Length: 335
Image 1 (cartoon, rainbow, N blue to C red):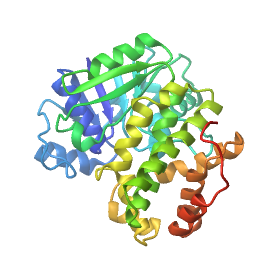
Image 2: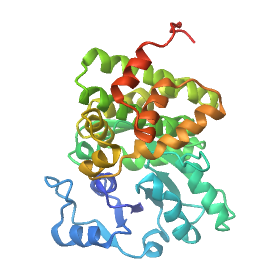
Image 3: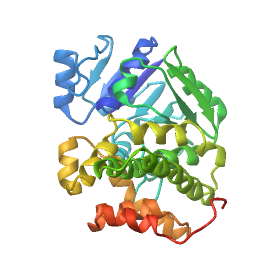
Image 4: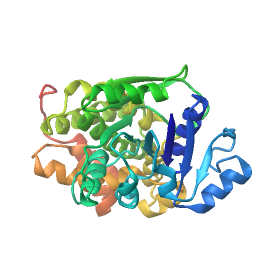
């Protein structure tokens, strides 16, 4: 198939490489021309220095040329830029294309997930057809996917046929893909696990141990499930690859930007200082405002999410946040 990959960060290039090795024709577009120049001239990505990028991959400066007539369009830009990119290419998209979102986040003003952002912006641009929207999510650090280290993801779409077609694009001996019709649940998992990973990093940065991390992750998935059920999602989604699977890898891996940023905050740096050191987009930060609004809107108790919000957005002391969490009133583990 002919596939456009929008975004030339580590995630975009890792997926472009996988798709190219699956013998699809891949075109990569980026708003940052310097990224494309570097990839064309050196065949390397600066943040994936040991990865050989297939020479068959094409690079395109024109967004219209990148997406027009393709069988599938894959969005890998940071969540904060998804709406802007869709606005620029909506009139070039067609009803036969698979529109696959691999960005993980929530939009603060609307509280939309990324597929909802894509659909909303397409309508605003006058698109009359019903787009085939798929969310792709799971335990997938770009650094490992690019090196063909085995993992699994979820292809989520309300139309199971489209979910299966998308799964076929990515399936190989190193990437196993499961399907799911709970699109909202898969996307909520992808956004909220980044916030929990910020907390996990803080735990490490403050010098706490494995017990503390295990506690945090367990109660973190409980919070994610609680908000998911309030939004009408399926409980099992949160126990699957997009939920507990992605949460585990994001909370424990040094590849995780959210984890690393949280660790630096736990060591005493401000968010601004920490994110600058990380040097890449920290998606958990951008999901915080929407997460806090969802908690309030649906009256869902999410103490870990609230504590992370207080530390990052209000400058609260991370150790005091831990003390407050640990001294909350007793309650049953069974909701």
